[in-house]
Amino acid sequence: MVPPHLIARLQHEENLRQQFNQWLASGQAARMEAWQRPAAEKLLDRMDLGPHDRTLEIGCGEGWAARLVAQRSPDGAVVGIDLADDLIASARAKSIAYQNILFAPGSAEEIPWAEDYFTHVVSIESAYYWHSPELAFREMFRVTAWGGRVFLLMSFYAENLYSLHWKEYAPAEIHLRSTAEWKEVFSLLGFVDVEHDRIPDDTPVPPDFEPDIHWRSRDEKEAFNREGALLITARKPPIPEPGPLASEPNPLRILN
Image 1 (cartoon, rainbow, N blue to C red):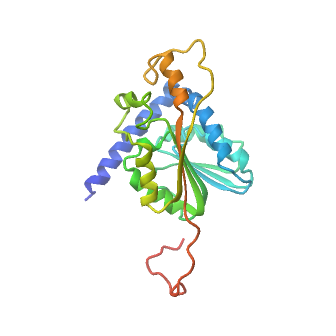
Image 2 (image 1 turned 90 degrees about the vertical axis):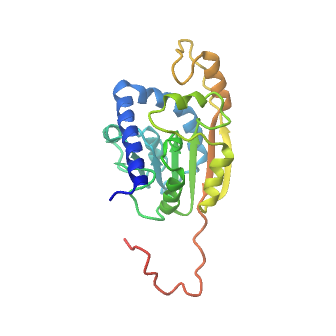
Image 3 (image 1 turned 180 degrees about the horizontal axis):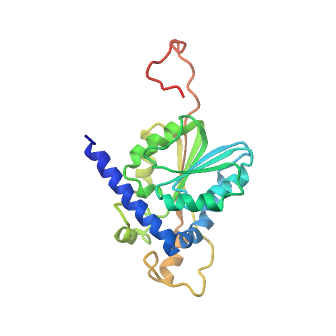
């Protein structure tokens, strides 16, 4: 028998899958890239990526951010996961020239990868969609390498008054949390050096701007850009020092 909480998560993810696939077909995914990209590029500058780093992007969409990461880590690896299978297909098609990128369908709450692997984990405008951020953060901790870093970028958060109406139009239940609440989850699940910042968008609002469900007026869009996206960063602690019994095998550890 499937547990009720799992049924609820799978239904939530199916609703998102259908909506995100429809956004691709309607062109909404491309429009979202256009407004997310300025803050995301500033985020990438802060990630301090090296040529051999291994990065996971959760909620990769059509893979535009993953491709930017791949250019900075040409001898490393980039993995992008997303719930929407059509988005994954598009990301693969657009990334055919890249030898260091892999895209796969996947959930933040059940990341299809081995533990202690990624030097960097990043999520751009995705975290508030997760059915259980607590479970997702636990998975992120599992797959992040010891000493690796995690980066969450989001514009839907309690202090950003210009995004609160998004909840009315979301394809599924989304989480409205404050900066302090997001940071607390990181700390409770074992991450250290949990910090936050705001990344404003200084791109001029174009003269032909048309209001939509995201920004109902030009003034609201300009205020939204000034408020900035919330960036939360954290680190998985360095590998623990071996204890006195470290040489004894752990029967509960799964070896791949």
